[in-house]
Image 1 (cartoon, rainbow, N blue to C red):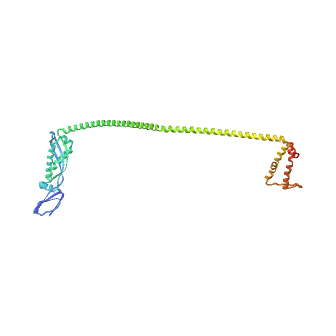
Image 2: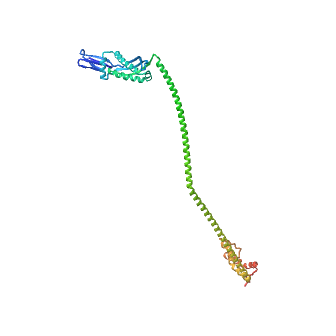
Image 3: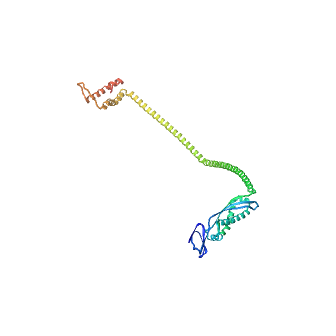
Length: 364
């Protein structure tokens, strides 16, 4: 018939045709009745409360230690399952747990005896790791694997741990005070260093600024010295140019004054010469008038008569339109105008005689 088992147990089939026995961890198997038999073994995880009372430590201080361990038969490992079946087949789960517990408690005692109270109390993790390592190497030979181990409690009946706690507390407090003092000291040192760095940086900055100022002054002095000669040369050139321009203006002014002076003198000379010529001419005319008397006067008047006639007729020649009104019995038109002009000319001797006293009609 068929038999089944869950994942938390294993079946072992032995008998006819099963040599060596068949081990199945979780599953089902066919078993021939009468000629084959089947046995079960638990694969549950077992929680063990491992107590070691009044175990003397390395310095002879008795303490009690309680640890919590989880163990189980490794059904997935064929070799460990076969070992576990050989050791625990037919035993109940409680019997398997008891065997594992005794093994763990023995290893726990052995480790306590090799350590001091301080080592166990102050470094529980290290103690747990040692128990786990030693117990695992021993229980694996039984087909049992240690899943975990944790140190739960450590105590004693002589107040050793209490005193140790006080000492530890005092040490912690002392360390706290020392730490606080060191922190304050370090803070002061850091502050002093910060101030020193600040001052150093400030001095460095001032030095750099002074150096930069010095370099600037040196470069400026060199530049000024370099540019001084061209500046002086340019100044000298401009001064000479200004002096030349001033002299040129003076010379031009003097030349212009001289030209004006010479021109004035020339004009004065010309006026003087003209005056002398006109005076000489007038003198000659006066002399001639004295010599010729009436004849000369008449000659001059006759010379001017054409001009007088021209001046008399000029208004008529400039007129664009002439309107003439006749009163009857007289000439009209151009003949009338010509007659008017001739009439004016015939009256000239009388006018000349009245002005000069010379009768031009009787002069021979």
